[in-house]
Every structure is written in structure tokens, then in C-alpha cells.
Image (cartoon, rainbow, N blue to C red; front, top):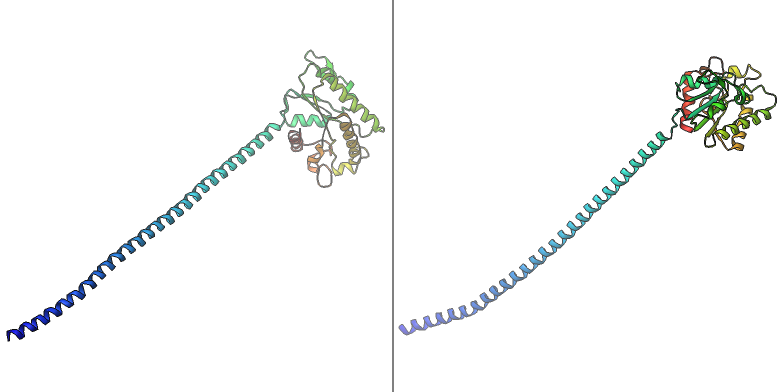
Length: 287
């Protein structure tokens, strides 16, 4: 009985031993496999982390480059805008500085129209050589400028002792009835050359004759725009030949038909205050 029992126990022990001997390798395989898997996974995780870090670094680098580029572009844009603004300010200042100052260094030679220009614009400091009925020949010879001691002298005699840097001439209206335009041209040149002789550094401007109103032009045989146009061509020739500056004053004062607007004058010839201001503004912006 005991023998049989021990035999059974031995068989069971043997079976258990076999079972353990087969289980242990399996456990070892599982443990080793798990360890290897963990190592592989860790390596994969490290690689993923590394890749993610590389990606993040690249993204941050791109972002930083973009930001730097944006900052640089903004700085360049701001610099361009500042330069543009400076240029505009410079041009604006140059434009303002360009406008001539009508002080005692400026002289006006002309007839009653020029008298209106000086009076209506309050040009009290300028050298006023305007006179009613003045023409290119009498401008040279007529003694109408009164000195401090009451003596009357020609404008050329008065100019000698004055610090005159520029002269504006507006003559021709009273000469529209002259039969010999060549005489007008010759006398105009003579006046310019005499001014140059006493004031060689003086800048000389010759102004176009201002046309008449339509009602005046179409009703007068002398004071009309046909004669004005003819004499303006002579003045342009004088300016070109004598190398002085021609100012097309009429362009700033006429209407679409080439006449002085009716509201600009009460007699069709002489300008009112508003148009005298326009005349002066033209001189300021074109001298």
C-alpha cells in the first residue's frame, strides 16, 4: 500500500518536475522578450522624442527666421516711409522756399495795371516804378520817380543806388495802337540792356500782356485780344533773344475762350483785387 502510494507520489513529483522544467524556460523567454521589447520601445520613444525635438527646433527656427524677416521687413518699410516723408517734407520746404519774397530787392516796372498789382496786394517794400500810361520808350526817359529831396528822376537813375536783385516788367497795353511793332521790340530790348548795364547781376522777368474781357475786346479797335496776342509774340521774341525770363501771366487769368473774365474787371482792362491776387500768386510760384 505504502509502496503503491509512493509510486503514485513519485509519478506526481516527476510530472510536476517536468512541468516546472518546461514552464521555467517559457518564463525566461517571456521575461527576456519583455525586456527586449521595453528596450526597443524606449529606443523608439527616444527616437520619437529626438525627432520631435528636431521638428520643434526646425519650426522654431523657421518661426524665428520669419519673425526676424518680418522685423527686418518692417524696419525696412519704416525706413522707406521715413525717407519718403522726409523727401515730401524736403520738397514741401523747397516749394515754400521757392516762392520769392517781394521785398526792397524786387522792382516792378509797369503802367496802371502794375499800380493795381502793387496797391491791392500791399507790396509796400518793393521798388515801385509803375506809372499811368508808361510805355517801353517812356520807361527809359520819363522822370517820374520822386527822390527824398523832391527831385524827379528816371527809374534807371533811381535803380543805380538800390540793392535790386530782380525786376518784373509789364508793359505793352498802351503800345497796342503802335503802327510799327518793330519799334516796340527795339525799345523793349533797349530798356532791358540799360537795366543790365546798371544792374548786371539782376534777374529780369518780362511778363505777357494780360488780355481784355470779351465785351471790351470785341468793341475796341485797339484794346483787343488780337493786338494783345501779336504783341505777346514780340515780347516772347525779346525774351528769347535777350535771354531773360518770360512769364505767361495771362495763362493764370483768362477763361476758356482766352478772355479776361467779365467779373475780373470793371472797365475790361484793369484787374480787380481778386485777380490782382491771382496775378501775384502766379509770380510767386513761377519766379
